[in-house]
Image 1 (cartoon, rainbow, N blue to C red):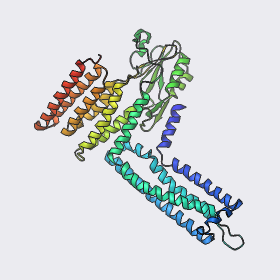
Image 2 (image 1 turned 135 degrees about the vertical axis):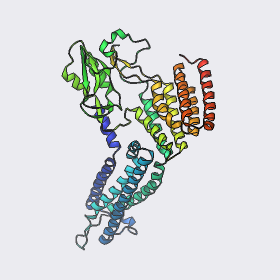
Image 3 (image 1 turned 90 degrees about the horizontal axis):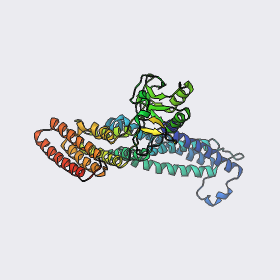
Image 4 (image 1 turned 180 degrees about the horizontal axis):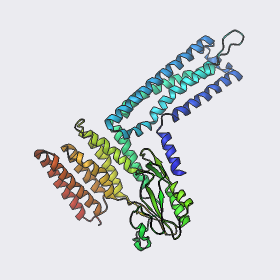
Length: 454
């Protein structure tokens, strides 16, 4: 149930209906409650405000009608502005950033405030009665309506400030970058099960069919197949380990969050000394949540792809904005520096008794560099300014590296960037890039010679 709950929470968080619905429901109860107080307790305690509070039914109806009509009109304007800003962001920065705008709490609260004010006024308005004998004017409820109107004005001022700020490229990249950093800090070094104590895994303890990723069942091996078509949104790692431990299984995962699956795909291969029960395979299958789109719940690669997408669009000939690409490089460099400082989990996962239970797809520093800088490389190489900043970014990442292999990966990336730039840049522009690449290689080799562990 955990991945499905995470999926539900993500869908709620990135919706424009949940927060407004909650606020609208609260407004209905607030309207009914305030009218109840006016009807049963009275408004004598408001006599001190008699100089301001109108006790006439016609005046109260006009006030509430004005507030309600204004609120629903502005709600329509707010919705139109929101859709326009979302459309602009999708065309300018890429459709994948729509998730960030849909999750924007400011837009959700703004829309909810005006809808709640409108519904509150309707609830109170229908209770006002004129006439000499049965006149009823809920004074407290009208005061609350005025307070809601003032709150709506304040929210409107906030919204006018918030919309242009939210579509600013620095705000978008900063939001993605912070989410990416949080994802790295949250996921590493913890992963599925317990990491080994540093001793190498005895490969002979791994059954031969599980020593490499395969999709063809062999003796004693069963397939945990996908039951849906879409992207893996989340994996219930704790339950996966618990099922493997309780059933005496060894699992090799063939996928990770963000991978696309169809009904012929295999989540994992399960090995056991005996035939794996169908109920166990069904339980294993339920630990994977599949969605029609990629989300950042457990998919760190999705956030990296978002930054790369914003940067590559900025370097396209139609936009030609290298400084936006530089901003994306800064956040990618910060993330890769954080990854370099952390102990990435081993692909081998053990239960509490020290038995190997899960073999996960390996996570490596090289893989993160390829996903970020590697995908970005061919676009960075087309612009001298972005290319030079990429070399500076690589030097910054190298300062955080603790292993010689990490610096070796960065050296390879510098050389790949230099070669790509030589193919697309003119001779005069490439001369500056080549000189900067030579300096970067020299500094990285010095750092490698100064004692970074192999």
